[in-house]
Length: 197
Image 1: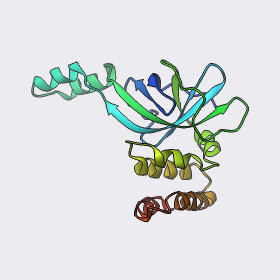
Image 2: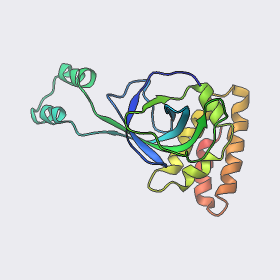
Image 3: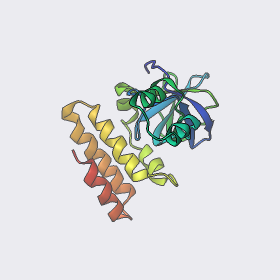
Image 4: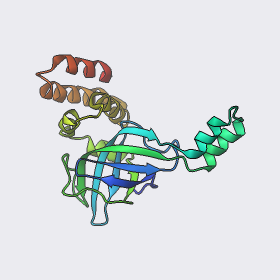
């Protein structure tokens, strides 16, 4: 696994998910559906999918709004130089012990406060999505937009593959989804229509 710059730090966590705080959304900051990882000091790396991005309440923004007209300079200053509180919510989908292949399932322990979140690179994404067992974790996750999350994630995972392999990856993902959602054809159809190559 490659070393990447931190984009945020764990605020709170559980075995099934965690929240991460970061300063401001930058181009390198993960987006909805991105695969991210948190390396732990004991050599375990936890993988997750971002399922929510929230811009938290900021008293300085409230003051700017109450002031009425806002100058473009004030808006840029607020966005670039102030602490804009961003919170990312992450669904855990797997883990990896140092030197071993990724496991798609819940880890033996969650990350702890102030562990560092990094964005997975293309090699990480290809390695993690070689298997599709994590699809069940996403489909069964309560109170998250799981269908939208799968669509975003699978489309990104396809894009990081060589052009000639993208279609096969999405076909394999579609077959696995058909197996998992054979009892809910309407839901399956809604997902498959949006992950076709």
